[in-house]
Image 1 (spheres, rainbow over the protein chains, first blue to last red):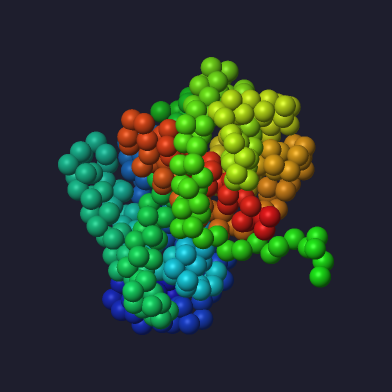
Image 2 (cartoon, one colour):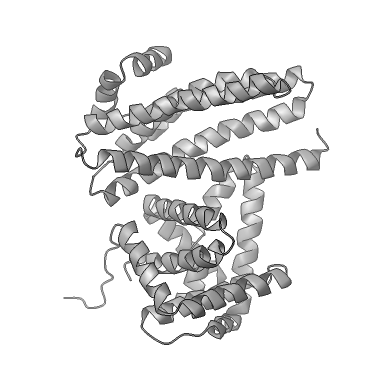
Length: 194
Length: 189
């Protein structure tokens, strides 16, 4: 199945896609190479192109790579944390299913990365694009919730587990975002870049 | 039956961990807050040089409290007896995380998580530097998901605590108590 067919299925008919993916989940490495890296590259490339237009090549490379790592780290962290998080609610979730669910739930966020093409100098446009990106990313919450339905997670546990997963994702993203900001500034400072 | 057999590590239960940490804290809140304040203050004054040793001292305070022994804030200075191994662990940790982070961030994060319990192995099991780092790495490999979840919960609690003026004086000790209690659970102690 091609990547774009997969994406189209996730967006148009998530339940059917979830049933297929969660019934026989691929290994995390296979998901990483076939889905995660290509999709996380969208935001990285958008940031790079934006920076090239602004004349900041080094900043573009550092921030582009950093944005890929940020999204990759969030996916990795969520995939690792989900089985332990599910156990808090007496739900058993295998590592493979956890990574498959994390991949599908984060797909909207990765696709919204194209909105990062808009320059930050155009303040209002940039602000609205970030808000839109956040709104698109929220569709991932619905995908995650449907995933819990497909996995036959008890009804009374689904909202709490979904909320906990959102919280964990937010913390992972924030910590990596802060670390990325610090690291990028240090790298650019050391290289004398802008 | 082999009485020396190590208990298999149980899955981490965050809710009961939080409850146990809170109960331990409220038994002697002044001692915990005082000890944590000493760690923060002296750590800042010494540019972080005494922080690992004092943290090890506070970990031992928590361990004493867990065994229902009376504790005082000044017991945190017991960690100074471990100055050499804790300072070395702290330095290696900070340098490795910093260098790893410069290599596109993720290696630094992996090291930060993998070695996060090294100080506990020095404070509670008397390991020297190299052995503590190896033991912490082995524990993280064995319990990656649970450990990561625990760290996420601790960070979240401290983020909330940091929103309030005195919140950090509560969330800080509670986080360290929770991490110390979890160390027992993760290791099957």
